[in-house]
Length: 113
Image (cartoon, rainbow, N blue to C red; front, top):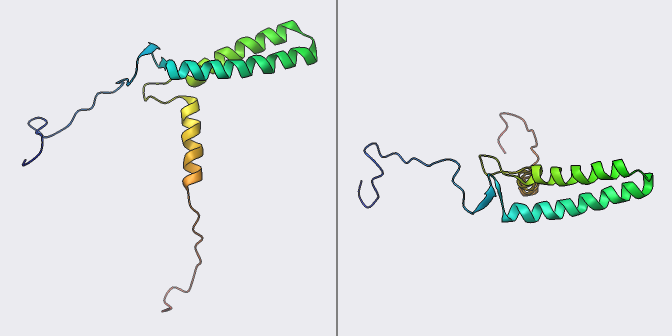
């Protein structure tokens, strides 16, 4: 191999899985996820308080608050592939926006244009 780096005898490169790029509080949950969780929890608490004001029920409000906080943590925590539910949804939206539509017009098969 000229001008390159010889990786090993078979010229194969081994990339380890689950390598994290930033410090984490626990597996899959770092500073960025904490900020996303705080924002999601605030929204969940606001919705729960609104439901509590409408229904007048404290148990519904408390269940809504706890579900909002737990749901925020579950949606922002990354898995072994470094993807969370939120990041996957953002990637899907960006992908759908990047797609182009090219309509196909069927013509006669052997006709020369």
